[in-house]
Amino acid sequence: MRSNCSSKTEPGLSLLGGALLGAAAMYVLDPESGRRRRSQIGDLAHDAIDTAGGTLGTVWDRAKDLSATAAAAAAAKAADLGDTMADRTENARSGLGHFASSLMDRARHLGRDATGRAHDTADDLASRAASLSHPARHRLKKN
Image (cartoon, helix red, strand yellow):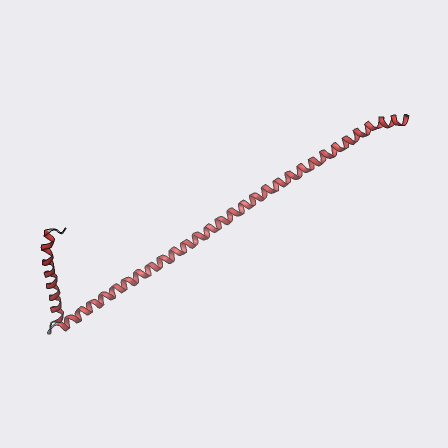
């Protein structure tokens, strides 16, 4: 629902707007001074457009410079990150290589120990078998 105040002010504002529009038309279309005024208005508009264009060009150049600086900084950060990741990968590979080499050395050592023990055990068993079979052979020869 509209208030009573706005219904009273609308006609007044319309009248005021119409009066201002009429005054502006009379100012510009005046037969004696209208041509000079229109030329002045055109010159003012042209100057305002030039100023706005110059300002816009300056803002555009500054934005372009800032974006180039930001892009260069981002590229440098990406390169640093790539270098850091490459270094960490190399360190991990190197560490894993040392760990694997150590495991291989331990496995070789354990294999040699196991082979040596197996050889010693086989020799011991062969000696025992020979010593056990010696009396059995001696008994067989007697029979």
